[in-house]
Length: 401
Image (cartoon, rainbow, N blue to C red; front, side):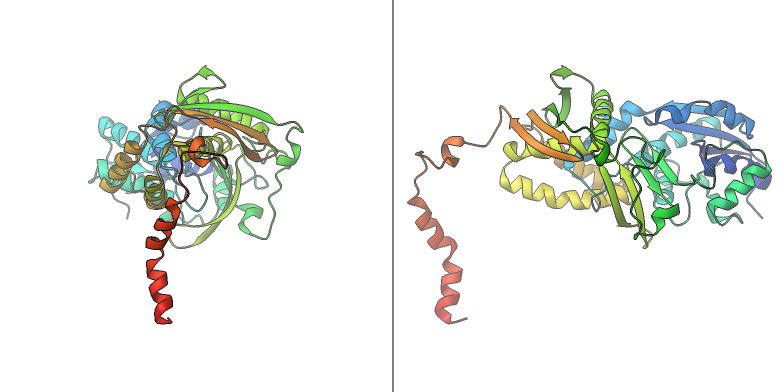
């Protein structure tokens, strides 16, 4: 028998899973259900959410605006590190911890004795949600319906919803599993489950943040991003907050077919999973920041940061945002950004990002030293350097090894 639960707070999006979970919780636990929706920049997906949540049985709905906090405290620290998980820019991975943290805060305030989420037992998000809950409310009961109920598929969920007159925005034909926030939109399921199938980027309604590169303009678009200590502060000469810069980059990048990723990734639970991601603004931001670092970071720091970025990305992907190690690595990354200020110009053309110039008051690049022309660099110095650097090779050669 299920544990007696009086009040449960549900991480609510209004999508298929959470729409079904509200009546399921009431049917199976007989508890009050409080829905919490986090605004992390998903836009129109929040329209009409309160009426829908109440109509399906929730006692109330909280809509929490977390967008600026999401950008400043989760997205930018990841961009600064240049962290990518197998090419994936972590759009869902770093959104889950901030959502879960706010849900815990509301659950504790409301006197709830359980928190529920709609993550499947196959995915990464169940781990991300539950590790955050354990960090901030270690005694809280967690309900994961996908690990309990008799429903076996999204088709079963649709049938369950239809039998209870629960309104849905999808059908069996458009039943992709999607996650959207300011940073990205992910697509999984249906024809994408077979890696042999090419995504139909030109299909109506498939892409939402981008266009297929084939449909992008025939003329390139130029942009200029300005950074101060690793953080974006202006776009095309106009000072803007980071959230607004990402919104603008989403528009510009999406129109030029930037940021589409089709990848088979290794999930935390051990299986491979195929997904298609749209991250137009994020792709531009990552690239511009990397370009600026090429002239502002020294070699040793750059190489160490690149190595640690793999570890950082795995921590974020695996739901360890609130771990001491993630916090320590972020402190390292912040320390590297003291001189990462300057401007980066890019040319966007049919899905491609092309470098078009970079400047910084802290540039380590010396044209005088690097030039093929006359300079202060004494080329004769290279002989002694090579003799010392190559000494182990010379000894090996003398030994006949």
